Length: 261
Length: 261
Image (cartoon, rainbow over all chains, first blue to last red):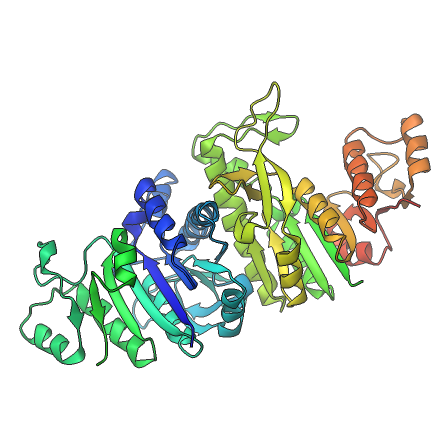
């Protein structure tokens, strides 16, 4: 089986033009099949402020009313996505930028929550594996914005971490998938304030021990739980680490590696 | 040779949600290979106003400073493009939305004008014929936003009429191309104020006669000149007509047909 690298880049990299450019240059130089999933950073929040559209967050998720959907569609699928693609093209990487509506790549439905109305927030139903495989096999690199659709004409705002995970899981039927969450920290830290305390490897038994000893800080738990879900669905490896260390993350020379065995 | 229909939709259709939806339903039902090129209507101008970005037009072309480029990228390649794609998907048409940067589909360069600085306006150098052919042959319908790139990392604002024409010309090496400009009028009119005066067919000799007799109104001349350029480059037929009459335009039952013979 061929290898596929699925990389999620966190928001704060997108807000820093020069860091983003270095990251994309590194990304472009990764050989073989690759997919980049991005968020929108603070740009959407800033545009909402400028346009006087109030933003409401619940559990770290944006409540997506009609005006907010318009803003995130413009920022994520328009400005951020197309600038990333143009930049990758300049580094010799033949990228195409996609929302989930394009080619029906990510089919979702409007979130149905018993007590909170998330508005136009989408939960993923299906990844278009054959089309993605076809594009990757044809030498294209995919850049995916966190906007999906319901195939009834409605665009939906969808969490980029979840998109990366669902794509990694679905593509595992075709490729050996390496899922990388790159963000501002060097990895999962034993001490959240000390970057030298990166945990190099997390396996299920050690993870249980870390949780029992409360040595892992709360914010990382859903990320690691999701990593184990991905691993159970066939993803070969999940790595969490600093975006600036992309090359070392891929070669397992830094960051936190999460594996099942 | 297979047939390819390249359709440009004018701005005012995009501003009218229900007209746009009917148009897209018609478009989705066209059998065979098809490409839709769209502009952004008044949305970009409205967003610029809301954000306090002053818009300057010269010869009907927007002067694209950095702020304006950001706005048109968001509106054209983000909001408009993704909503069109989601709508086409709902009508069973497997569309993908693209800027010229995606897959390096439209390579352009920053306009170099002796006296006017158009800013980030792009003039087209090359259309990626093999990739477009590959996508069309695979059953995908392309929806193209009027944003191109220079392969040096710079996005560029490019006239949608010109994009439609250049795509039609370039794809003529692979397909029998039918280029349709759909807008708010029923076609080329003998009397601009009377929709019943549509000229059904324009051939070069008749066009010279119409111009000599000043029976053709000034705004149409560059459109028709461009149509003849397209025909000379191998495009089979150019049709100009009302967006609401799309099906009849394709079947040559309405609008103005421009042909070389």
